Image: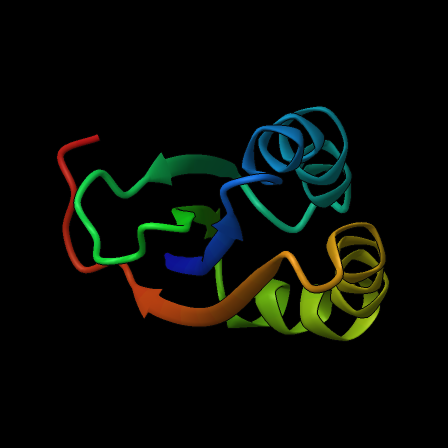
Length: 104
């Protein structure tokens, strides 16, 4: 299993609208691709950005083939929509981790 992690720093004046949009639009669109098994949204409680909130979106994916298909077929358009709606209000970086062990 792999964990596709997107860490997003969102300006304070936009983060409530951003979180609502993520829950109601973006994440359902990501999950509708069929490439991921589940997702998790987390909010960093302690960080040094006084003008922003930081969230992580974590998507559980079966294998590298599913992730690569998502990145090639779906991610460009979904990221474009995100950029268009929240331009200048966020920064993001993405990482991929191998799930080594879990008790879930």
